[in-house]
Image (cartoon, rainbow, N blue to C red; front, top):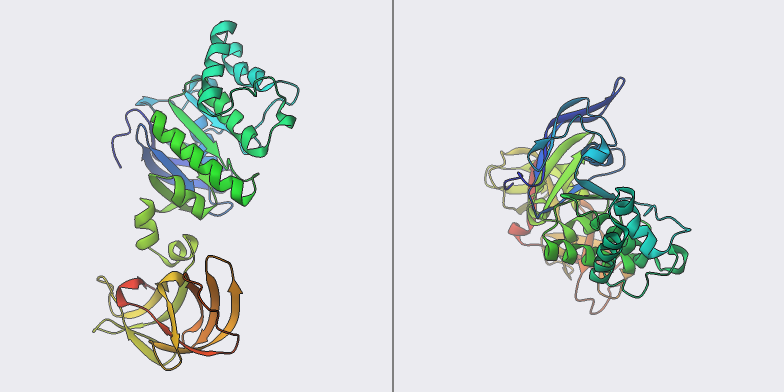
Length: 348
């Protein structure tokens, strides 16, 4: 990653609760003006990592730097960070303006100056005119933006998001994540963002750090993680993937269930491997064509695509027909085709 002197540097940090290791020797950097996402399943250590950056959890070993300064032993209020919580944590009895002003005023900023800053941030987030409303009078998306405004008004060096969209419905979640990304880029904010939602991480991030069992499984750009996962876990976790165990021959031919097909092996040694192929990289053909013969077992029309589950010699394969022209029927005989460059071969 790029220079993190104005952002966050996590240097071999661990967190243990008695005999349980929640975060194990984790190192990463968040450069100034960059949005980095901690992604992983529940219990992988991502929220604990975020809380150690915020100073809400003590570090067992390792060093945390913010803006180039060692803050490992500093309290939360002595770090130049601000956190947007999953629950928003808005005061229900306070108006929008009072909620946003609360932080600066509690830090003894002049009230007039605090209101001026609050109005500016609310206007920036499209909330002008809502200053007198209570949180209960706002939509979920508006409440989320108030929570962001309350964090931004403190003008922190680093903004932390903990599962910020989990309380929103799918359509609103898509819109608000776009707003967060546009705001982050517009203001060159340094952001560390936690989510378990792979699509959300792919949509908002400059870099993604995928965690598994308290360690970093892989980190890189969204494109790198999606197109070149380093393990079976990564291939399965980032987006949809069909995973097929089989054998790779010296001539880069993959075989499973008695059926072989040429693949791009990218330096993987011959022997036991796992083939990962995205559903949208597979194509349904007429029976007798393609690399595999199969039978449609399930068909789901989703408007923008048709999803098929096809039973083949390689097991059941999920296939997305993005054009969604005419659905094949259940029990139809079909072929499955793919380009050799469209699959990922992983050592097993």
